[in-house]
Image (cartoon, rainbow, N blue to C red):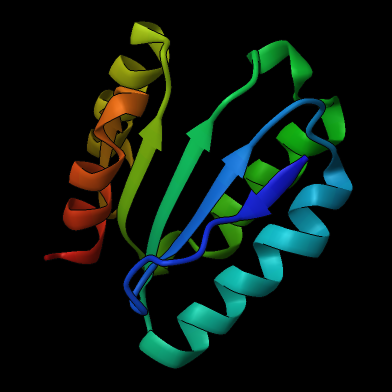
Amino acid sequence: MIRQLTGVPANMVAFSAEGEVTEDDFKSVVFPAVEKLVTRTGELNYLMVINTPLTSFKAGAWLQDAVLGLKQLTNWNRVAILSDSEAINTFTNIFSVLVPGEFKGYEKTKLDEAVEWVSGG
């Protein structure tokens, strides 16, 4: 499941992926929050904490994640992915070269640092 994190600056959205992550998680939790933020601010500052193995992301969830990326491509500003996986964090850092916006991978213990960076604080 994906749940939206509260207590973050108003110019960003933050989520935590836990247990099994499905297509509906993206459609019912992520997309509405992202669309609301982009409508209000004109850009997307996004944070995702991955608290589950990537094998827990169902195929439909990966598809919806890709749809989000394409749909908001020109709005990406700052994105942080927090994970215990060095490979995921490295991939996130490299991804910044390929698409608009800035992407950074963080260890999950650095949530406060990631929130500050994503929000531009």
